[in-house]
Image (tube, rainbow, N blue to C red; front, top):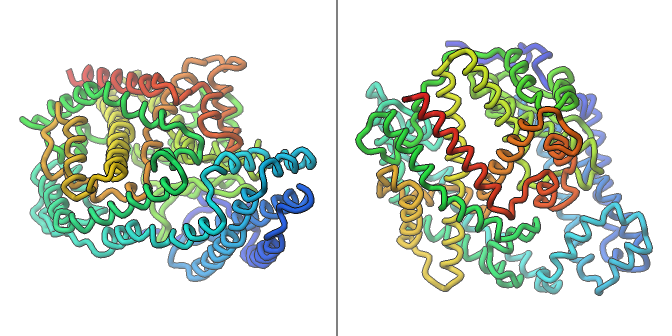
Length: 606
């Protein structure tokens, strides 16, 4: 059996350079003491922000930024050191210390927003006029003022803060039940060997070529959830009621409006997404019918949706080969973007190979005072090439945001976070498809097309269906109707019939899928996957058409989007890049691309 390498055995050229954050651990330890002092110093401003002049407010904002910036460096450095080898007790301890500092900072600055919002009308505006330096924080302060009508009295806010932990009980209880207490039965694999079903193994079983294995996994999973369905229904109902309670006391029309208002996003964006998806379900049906034909089954079932209909190409990619492919793929973004991305490969941004104890998966991260970092666990599969492009999309977004924005506006919102990563994936898909077609490699072409279609189905159609379920569940409770297990199963089953029913036999067990989705406890989050993918589709199409990188063209606008960070509301930033998500045409254009790719895959199989 081939054992994983130790970290010490991996060439330094394939490791990230965390010394660019702190030169060594001793410097990091010293910085912890400094950060602790900076956080403690913030306490002296409590109760003083509203008096005299805006000078004190500006002074506080500067010191809060300094404390936050230092704490972020510590948190990122120690966490990534721990991620190199999770068994390393030194970094476990250092990360725990950094996390403790972070929570201390959050607790210490909690007075800031209520105190500013408690100022009498016009006072903050007066401070900003008399203290020009506050202009640096104008957008942050204006965001707070915009939400002022939904802020309650000091005593009421205190009561809500005290109740917040109790309102999280449903979420916390579901997490424990789902991750710690639920046990699934064993099923027989393709060779007849009994293997315990787990959350992690479920997706692998659904991708099995053996239909019996897929069906057994599907049935066993939902039989288990069915045994706890009434308990889980009460947990989710509690979560919905907590959302509706908070929205009501803060004078919002709905929990959906309350959630979206933080980023100044209109409910129209959410509703447009759903209605546009409804108008394009025939295209999904067409794709499902193609899947049914290729699989050669009489009836396509819910457990047939994830098995690959095209084998993954056997080719393996070295990291160096993948690097060249990704760099070639992003050339439409222009020479400057390409040169900046090359720094990721030469300047220690990427931790490439798996080693014993290393955190699994992939991510992009970093802090304001360093270049971005990317964690990989390279296996050389074609999916790893897409992961590299995806994570470098995030990294380049952070690189440009940090390079062009002050600290307080460098972090971008979740709403736009997946746009840059998906744009890079789309450019890579276009490049690799072109190369496969030039080479006459129809197997690779079919695999790439199906890879794209599955990503689209899972990210756009499926997440929109989730978003529609959340909206219906919250509306039912808000209307005073009982949100029982039967009611939720009915809503969810009907949605599956609507989305999949014309192309797939909708198994009754799927009515319980709502009971296993952790994202439902972070309400009205998943729609952003669909809007982000749609925005990225429009942006990448514009970049590919802008072959000469014209001044003021699609590519320049996109790069300006990357540089904008969190300096404005996400819809405004995207609008300047040429994507208006209040207009359903953006979603429609993405769905048109999906339809075109379905036609291309049909042509390959005909």
